[in-house]
Length: 316
Image (cartoon, rainbow, N blue to C red; front, side, top):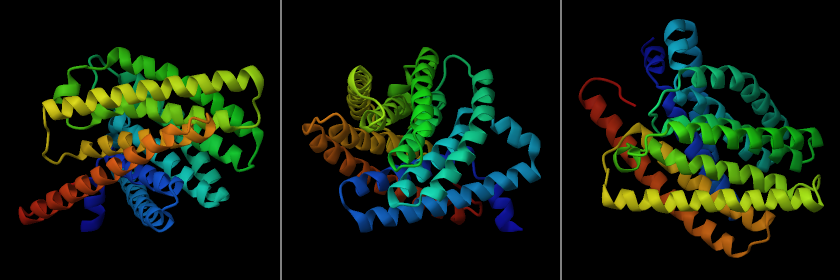
């Protein structure tokens, strides 16, 4: 019973840990670091199962609290985390499992998205960009499955989700509190991460043989523009971290690691899809930065948990 009660206290924002771990696994896979990528995949899968159990416990034991939590942007990490995990499993060759995760995400996405959009206020924290991230997560997973030969209809669905995600990015940007770049506790980095996952989705569509000629060229340009905007945001946010250091552990720091890893993966994918070779070097450097950030946040999390136990209460 104690374990069940602790599961009920896990916040929805913890899904960012799955997103961060999963995307670092994807990046390591793209660099050919199979063993290390597999370790990160195992951690991401274990965390996903834990959070799925927490989701179920809260739904069954505190439905009103579950409904209230679903109105906040962090609830969308459930969709994004599932899509990131599904993408890595598809790259591993587990297409049936990836399809099942896509179906699960697609079922949860409309209800959560509409709930969050109805309650989104201005000014909003960086978590507001999760409306874009969750939508683009569907696009990335669907496009990955299409490239794996699971059906051209998935590529068309990915195109629709990708374009909708870009529109939702604009909606979140209009509400974003830009002061967060200097005062945010970690989730302000999603402003960059949302563009990175959009670029990744567009790069996978660019790599699809379904589009040729003008269609392929348009997707290539879209990919490069999105990646350029992402890297610009990345630079701004990195400078602001130096100017205003925020070194204490916060759960929202997982939402920093995810954009770092996603920017790396977007650069690596774009290098191949858009035939811009120098982006491979950029992506490699960014991935090792994300890897180091993951280790730092994981260490902070472990220290935080140990302090919580010492104080006699569980902490996430």
